[in-house]
Length: 442
Image 1: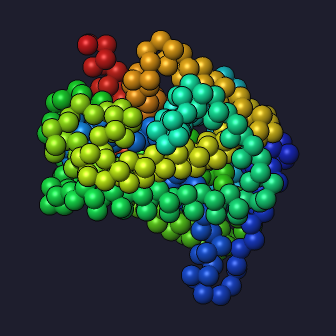
Image 2 (image 1 turned 60 degrees about the vertical axis):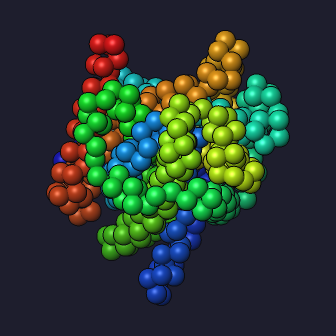
């Protein structure tokens, strides 16, 4: 039997996110629905990562270029995400530690440091998408120059500080409010676009071109990287531990069920938004002979005349800014969880945010100076492919840990779930290997 985390990790490092650990009181009796409300929230923070500005770039490029053909990838990726996030919550409640802490107590120091650096790269890639996406949204809505918007986004650390002081439930409420705003914007735009829902239904089945067209595969992997986010697996396993559950097997099992229900509902909500972005791009651009639309500013400029409403463009920009703000919160939390779990370093949330954002600002500003604003979309899509390439470093340890009876005890994942998760891990690694091979082969 492997050693327990308590034997290998100092007690002071056990509490993920410091004072937020176990800070949310839960109902232990009463109707299931009221008990579920105590657990509702973390799933929506996780869902935020599934609809960040980088996802917009890949979904818009995919919808404009290939119509609704990549809708199958969006749905499949969301189903993968639901299963993997369920394993993340199971690991946290069964062991009392997040995924990064479980990796920290299991891996030798060189491996642990390697995983940490790779996850930091994934978080920087996420932050890069947020920097560019939020700056583009500000430019479209207010006319603020793109370079100035990129620099201005570094000030969102003040927002992090404010919400951390008010408590974790306030963070969750803020995220949910912005998600509702985003969903409302896209609901109105879909009404204006009037997409062919019969074509959308057909696109739920895979296209053969996905496996033979390198351009479609590249965008498909970008959607995969934007949907199944590697840092989200670390994030979820940390933020569910904000719930103050009891130590008994029954209490942990109940917490796992309710946390999985929370994340499943939230990710289905995220799927509706992700699918709406792709369907909107297909209906507004591909169907009107604009397959070249890939950049967010191009989408903004074309969406109003094509849909016949100036409101559509404004809603597009508002939703884009809301996505960037939401991702700001969750990327900071994920970065703190990863840093604490792998190397046991605690940073003030504002300092952590400024550090990550400054690293992301450098390539964003350099791209704008060298290639102009038009080059930022390629950087957005590339950031999502980077996320896809780093995904195995989150999925593989998660599947391994949750399948271990020695680690999980009676809360070990069912063998069928572990088998499907293992297949997902193999598929992700295989697709990424093909992407690298195609890039090398030209």
